[in-house]
Amino acid sequence: MNPRLTQRIAFAILLICTLIVIVPVLLIVAMIIKNGAGAISWEFLTTMPRAGMKEGGIFPAIVGTLYLVFGAVLFALPLGVFASVYLTEYARDNYFTRLVKLAIVNLAGVPSVIYGLFGLGLFVTFLHFGTSIISGSLTLGIMILPVIITASREALDSVPRSFREVSLSLGGSKWQTIKRVVIPNALPGILTGTVLGVSRAAGETAPILFTVAAFYLPRLPNSPFDQVMALPYHLYVLSTQVPNVKSSITYGTALVLITIVLLMNLFAIIIRSRFRRRKRW
Amino acid sequence: MTRDKRNQRIREFFIEKTISASGIASVVIVVLIFVFLLKDGLSLFKIESIQDFLSGKLWYPISDPPKFGILPLILGSIVVTAGATAISVPIGVASAIYIAEVSSPRIKEYLKAGVELLAAIPSVVLGFIGVVTLVPFVKQFFNLPTGLTAFSGSIMLAFMAMPTIVSIAEDALTAVPRSYREGALALGATKWQTIYKVTVPSAASGIVAAVMLGVGRVIGETMAVMMITGNAAVIPKSIFQPVRTLTATIAAEMGETVRGSDHFYALFAIGIVLFLITFFINMIADLYLHREKR
Image (cartoon, chains in turn red, yellow):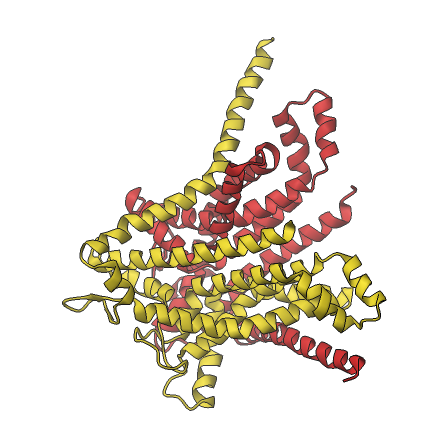
């Protein structure tokens, strides 16, 4: 066959495959917006669910998800940034460093339900935190740790060596150099990674199933040791466990969830592109 | 040395120790995960042999006497994963090639954003959409008693593996040095000949890593698979039948067990199996990624 013709056919097939990946996503988002938009009202966003979740709003689930995500970041951000500073600034190229990197790769690949089991074993049972916000937050925090570490490492690595050398030659100590020069220059990258981690934490269901999520709890939590409802779990419950829910409520919940998640991703993309444009080295 | 200076030294000493400790934390966490799975999971093997657990054909955890054979669950996971892999690998690699090698720089940005969008959608949302669209479609199209089948699960999971496969394979293709392509084009090869004879073979190990990570993602997926595959813990005879995976079993049953019961231990034992499977898959993927870098 004529190589030009072969190329045309091959490229057409590749294009079709690409469309098979991309088009359904757009359809899914469009479908959720179309069916869910009608349910969104001030009342839906700010009142408690009523009548066994068949009526009313999803306020406690929104609040629950925000608490969980906030707790996860509080735990994972410092730990993740310190861990990546260790890897880029301190670690020597030896077996131990290789082991740390392997551990991070593995954490990233551990199934989310295993995090759930781990959280149940360690936080809920062993440390006696019970089924609570704190157990759920810590579980989610550990889950997003590899995301934050990987992004922060990349950001720290991209700060030129000369920046560090200038600071050190001016008499700055190693920590001063890291604190005043390296981290500030890597901040946008760290932030991007954190936001992506947060968006992942907001959408995950399996890790919170046995560590925090309440099936139906139409009130706000009083302390970090309370259970809460959470958006992803609420969506799961509405779509599989409760019969005869108005579909607008289910779609509305899905819409609120993907809006939160996608806004965070958009935010991350904006930080990233701003940073790229401003980068002067 | 002034006192200020000494205080600073001391402070930095502690900060550097904290940094080292954080570096070690990842290793500690992986070990802790495994230890906590073993702690509860191994208790099952006081009443059940490992052999019966892995090859037992019946999973009746709450009947009397209970049966803890996870063969149907392992096969359920394998069937769904195999189906998802068969769909997602060719399509995913093809779109990676299109995005990396064929599309114009502007279109490329849009396509990559599309893939990122797919990666961002939570699995429970995809599960919900699968329940309201894909499941009734499969039921009607193949004229089945239920649309909650391994096949539906495979399609949905194929989509969830796509972002991993596409983005990592695309990275691998982009990393192939420009001079390789130029060499082939200068010898008179067409763009397509260059792609399949030079670029793709050069990126092969990265593409293998992409596929492995995609498979790892699929095996570990929980929510969507639980909502779509019908959750029948029987040995699957065809892909158009409800199945239950390892992950779905843990997620669906943990809420109903009593802490410290044999059933509870059995679910942790499933966790051990799952952890080991994904651990090895990730190791292999990492090996391939590193081979490429050298």
